[in-house]
Image 1: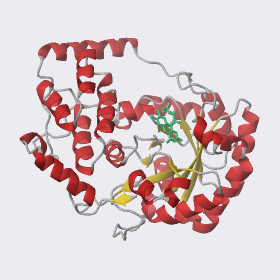
Image 2 (image 1 turned 30 degrees about the horizontal axis):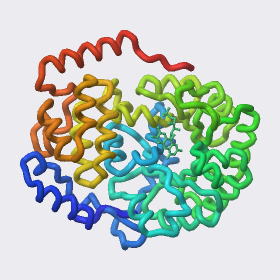
Image 3 (image 1 turned 120 degrees about the vertical axis):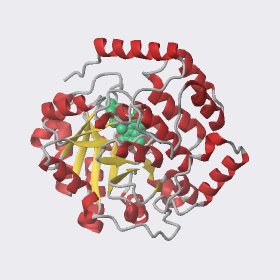
Image 4 (image 1 turned 90 degrees about the horizontal axis):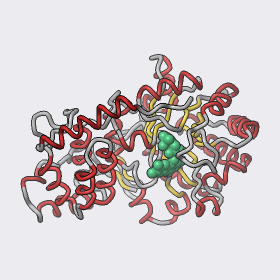
Length: 400
Ligand SMILES: Cc1cc2nc3c(=O)[nH]c(=O)nc-3n(C[C@H](O)[C@H](O)[C@H](O)COP(=O)(O)O)c2cc1C
């Protein structure tokens, strides 16, 4: 795990790489400020202490006072890394998660810490999601990360076979006593200074989920995120908001609804229907990181900001390409999309952007603020306009 320190080793490597391929197209991707420090529990950090204002329970209370749902960007293995987290925060996301990090690996191997968790001074409110199957690993992990996060989330929903076989993720949905022990241990050690959340799926029989919820509430959980699918439901099947509503009705702690939230309008509809305190979006923010700010599609500025953040902080090229590919998917022609995905390195990807769009760099007037895609080719722009019109007329409907 790292925290960005003024030019960490990784940043220096990124800079060196850019200098090697020195060209104008790189020179403005330089977000190196004292604020951007990478920290590791193996390093001494001078990050400011966590602020009570960033405590997720304070954020939930604040949103309630403002009469609106809490907007949460959920955990995504591989994707919810520091540059993406900063991007969604820019667009009015209240609470952001790290990807699930496996406690067993994290507490035992320095390499896992370096590659799995990167943070900086402005990476807050932040919940670090943990994949764990025992109290000892979870507590050791909390000991290492608690100065750098505002909350710990326990993943009780991951359906991936290898994790379930190890008793991690969705396997925990049939072990409520173990989950309660884990929650109790964290709360006993850290009290209100470290928020404890569990992210669950629903059972086929809702009575079982209700029992589960009561059990973890008794153990002291601060809030619960409910994904409205069972561990066997495919993600293409609509989330069951009726079950989320039933859980909210009996719960004494705040409940965040998860599943199929693709727009700000969805967020309000889901919370109105279920009565939940907030909504967690995952694929929604992956495809449109600005959705909580009310944008129906990814605004162009988000693409510029993401390229700047990802190249400044350092993110593997394929990951950057996948993010950008998701952001562009609904807005560009198939031809352009294929061309983007054929780029084999960051320089080629920038060539692609400079060929088809007016891509501003940090420092340019208007950087990061355009909404429409600034196509150089009129034909492509017309195609995009037609796609937008057709999306508006056919529209996707949320099943509540
Ligand atoms: C690429 C990807 C990675 C995911 N990684 C995680 C994860 O690390 N932890 C977790 O609890 N759920 C993970 N999920 C599940 C989501 O958090 C979420 O529960 C699910 O996608 C439903 O929400 P959505 O309809 O808003 O996408 C992942 C989903 C996707 C698409």
